[in-house]
Every structure is written in C-alpha cells, then in structure tokens.
Amino acid sequence: MDDAGPPGGGDHLPDVAAAAVRVKICGLTRRDDAVAAARAGADYLGVVLSPGFPRSVLPVHAAEVVAGLPAVAVAVLVDESVTAARAAAEAVGVGVIQLSGREPPQLAAALRAEGTWQVWKAVRVRSAVQAAAEVERYAPVVDGVLLEGWRVGSVGGTGARLGLAEAERVRRGLAPDLTVVVAGGLTPETVREAVRSLQPDVVDVSSGVERGTPGRKDVDRVRRFVENAKGTNIP
Image 1 (cartoon, rainbow, N blue to C red):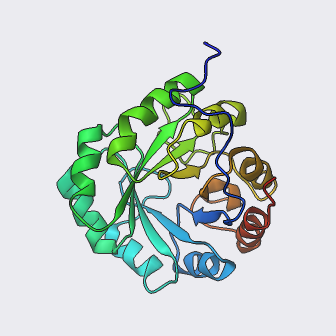
Image 2 (image 1 turned 90 degrees about the horizontal axis):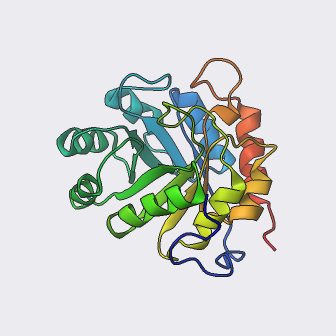
Image 3 (image 1 turned 30 degrees about the vertical axis):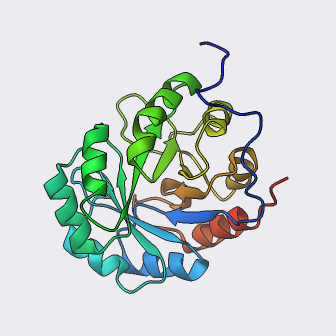
C-alpha cells in the first residue's frame, strides 16, 4: 500500500505523558468480575448488549453487573437502530456507547444527540490508509475512535491483534480532542508496548484477561493489566 501517512498526519504523537492511560475492561458478564475490575482501577466497564456474541448479556442483567461501581459503564452495540441503542443504553445507565458494527456516520450522529453519553466508533485496522479514511468519516460525529485488530468476518472482541505500525500511522493523524482507544490482542504482557507506541487515552481488553470461558475474567490478569497499563512511562 502507499507509503504516505494518513490525512492530516503530523510528525509526532501527541504529548500525553502527563496523563496516565485509562483502562477499559470489556465483555463483562458477571458482577464479581466487574467489582474486581473496578477495585483494580479500571476506568470503564464494557458490556456487550447486542445479541449473538459469546459475551452478550441482556440489558437488565448488564445493569446488575455494573450498578453502583466507580467506573463508567460502556454499552457495546453492533448494528442496532437508534431506537434500540438508546433503549439499551438507558436501561443500563451507560456513560459511553461504543458502536462496533457497520453503523453509518449519520446513525452515530443521531445517537450522540439522543443522550448525555459519549459515542465511540470502532475502526478495524487492516491498513493505515484504510483506517485513516474510516476515522475521517466518523471523527466529526463521535467523541472517540477505537482502533482494533482486524480479522475476516469479525466485528471485534475476538482478540485479533492490532498491528502497531499501522495503528501508529493512524494515531499520528488524529485530532487532539478525539478520545483514542486501543484494543485488539492486548494482554498484561503486551499492554506496555501498546501504550508506549501509540500513547492512547484508553486501552481496552476483553479476552486478554480471561482464561477459558469467554466472559469469565481472571482477577489476577485484570489486576496486572491495569497495573502495567497505568504504570507505563511514556517517553
């Protein structure tokens, strides 16, 4: 593919060394895991509200999973209508709606206007040029973009590893007021490298802190992921 950087790219990544990266633990299905994640210092707790995925939960159950915890609840939705997305988000009481399907920018804009929540759009990085073009479409109508690994037929949450070289090229072109979330194959062992390379605002993990059954988090891996992410020095 072309060697040129993404549109609007600068020479340096933003200087975010003064602020610790925030952490999102996603794909939560059990109250105990959400409590453990919040105690470990997670800033965001993600629940998958669209049906048909290994970690999908009903909104009524998701509300019980995240209720009253000192972290922002995130509704992960895939190709829902504005009406259905709003209803699910309100039922859980989320602070962020993450769109992880093929939602058009018009839907993101409409949903953003429907409540006090922020809207993030997931972008799967096949190449820097492709991902930068997608980000450019959504940036005016969302509060954040989530850069994640790409796998054929996947809509995220599979642990497909994010290519850091491609993601770094995209990262260089992002506006400073856009929340940048990084996901895809992150683990307690790899999150430091992602933080140093991409200097994201948020790192996001689901399968990387599990052992065995999807949705059942390993408390020790959650704790180490948060510690390693927040303890990473950015040059």
